[in-house]
Length: 189
Image 1 (cartoon, rainbow, N blue to C red):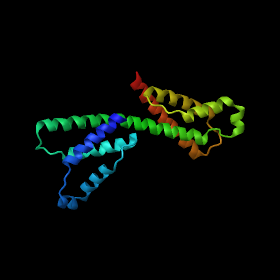
Image 2 (image 1 turned 45 degrees about the horizontal axis):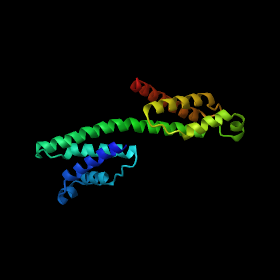
Image 3 (image 1 turned 45 degrees about the vertical axis):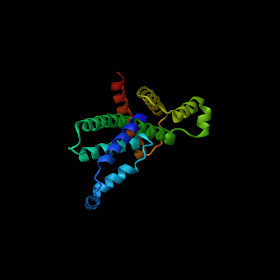
Image 4 (image 1 turned 135 degrees about the vertical axis):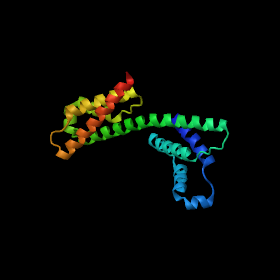
């Protein structure tokens, strides 16, 4: 995350250097002023925030980078932009994994057995649930193992008494997880 945050800060620095500062221009172009304020307001504290910030600053630099700067500086900005695009690609996947993890975790926390009687009668279930709720995978391999364990657990403990809309919601989440797992398997090979 630190590498992506550093790339964001570098690109934001270039944006500040090259952004239009003419008060009349900014007054006449409120959308540009809004973009500048939005970039300045970003606090890169999460992968999602860094991703949003990188998308903003790369787009802004593409629009506002002046043609008349010397070649060395153009190369420096172009390199920073390329690294920013690389970070965007990596962060999109990371954010997808994090969101899928949270969605799945929320689903089995909400729909899976939570009655103490059931959990006390089946200690392995309680242990497995606690394990799934507390896990925080970080690598692609860990996410793949986590998603595999969580989907297997949900297949075993999927409640029969859910409404049609709840069943549809869980099926959609499970389909999303299986798609993410398929992509992870391709990348890990």
